[in-house]
Length: 404
Ligand code: C6P
Image 1 (cartoon, helix red, strand yellow):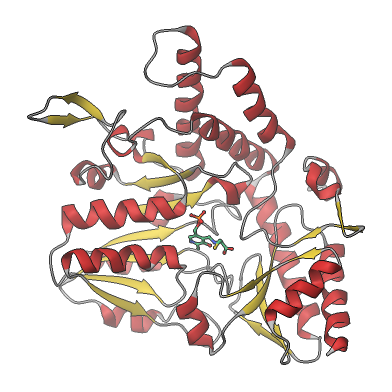
Image 2 (cartoon, helix red, strand yellow):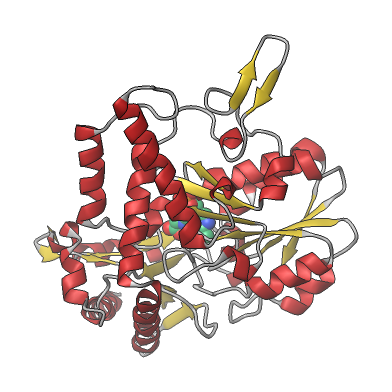
């Protein structure tokens, strides 16, 4: 049984007030709040264990290394990677995507090769490919979507040519909440001899993601969106691909042997982890993943699905409401505009009522253009969001609407 009141007690920040009102935190797609045990794990590690990893013969260093490498195994189990060698720690989704755009391009792509990205991508899955395009003359093609915000699979299939080498798509759109059919997209990509990267920034926090089941070649996600700390993220990559990719950055940790004439690199995944890693962050991320696993990803998904549906129904009834993204099964995100009210005004006035939402282009300007707007307001949910908070949002929007 998923007891939301008990769950909320794990998150001290949810009890605070803003402007003398109870906080209604609905900006979870930007970052989630942290359960007590994640914060305590970080404090405890700094107080009792702290030492650099992979370097020392001394007790603390070995203990810190054990925690760090155990965290890698936890991540591998969580996403069902075949081996922990396939789990590279990064600073977050953005760095993971830049790593692939750099190292994959160097290993596998040539001038004129094509990369497919979708119209609903976050800037982090657009700009790294544009940088690679500038560097080596790649061609970027854009997969369109329907007006409901679903990936246009027919158009997708027609975009493939013998030069198509890689597909890069969000598993869940951070604006529309659409859950993209990545298993099907992976099959189609592989039939055409291409690889597929799935940006899991907005899926991994919400439902169980199995990299082998969806058949992706790469998966990226951020710790801070899955109840872990900021500054830590993951790149999953199939071992056979990672093996062939050159290092992304040079420095300590990623080398086997260095001389001024020649350097050899460490084995996977260390080849991609230059410099001292955020070993406290990796351990805390593992604590966060253990936390959500204990609650049950299926329970979390069920709770958030019901909440999203409830929010969509309640919000649709507000006069002047325009909802963006109505795909069946959409997850945990509701983007909207109300009449002619500027989303920034809407967000600012809701904030005064204690309700935190995000407004603007949501780092997806091409998607805003596709929807014909400059910006949107967005409410996004988490495992601790309640129906009462959705009601507060709906009442808040109605109150703001009447001011205009
Ligand atoms: N989206 C949002 O409010 P980073 O910043 O590296 O942790 O994640 C980037 C990123 C990549 N892909 C998707 C689908 C995302 O949603 C995000 C982050 C936040 O929607 C902050 S812009």
